[in-house]
Length: 321
Image (cartoon, rainbow, N blue to C red; front, side):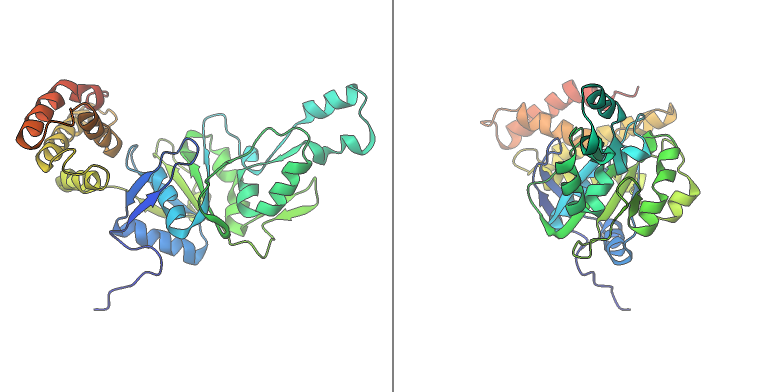
């Protein structure tokens, strides 16, 4: 049987990435489903919807993809107040009215001067967005953009936690995601028509807290990040090895921490509560490393960290109970 070979993303890759604004630098262990899903998203130019419980590394998959592709990373975190229009552009009629009342007139009150590009405008038409931003008199929004990566190679856009928004938001993205662009009637301009720009790789995450509209789902590839419970401990340790070496926390401590987290997950599931995941596990190991004197080594370090873990584990693992 022929084994498929991917062009860009490979299972087992450890991808290093730098800090970008509030997004911390680090590294990412790429699993097989993620590698194939990213490769397919590039091939089809479809957005990739990444589903899974909190703390599974969904958001940092996008950051890792940008680093691997050497593209610019742009992110927008969705909240309950985010509207679909905000992702396209923000228009400020109040500022225009204030300028008019202050004596402004003529071309100075052109509505285009009060039009601020949103994150999708930047992702699908960077040059157009930059020009519009410079022309805008009231600059209210500029996306976080990574220092690394090249615009010539394109953009990876993360729309994070889309399930936090009202259902109208994903529905408002149908044209953009389906056609790779959108109209700006106020300018008589089509965003997404810059032939020299690589189409963005769009990655959207959801914690499945709210059901997404079927029409939206049809426009996306869907990757579910989940791990079978019977190998959850091994899965955690594999990812811990990427972040924390065995000198900082030995394999016995990593296994003990994983077992304690698994117990908490089982208990949380019984009570219908949020389960601890990879993020909590890495926090626990990081705390053990940082709170252990560097002079302690080998068996003495292991014994100390096991005792310390018993004292601090509830702070990170028992939040849901």
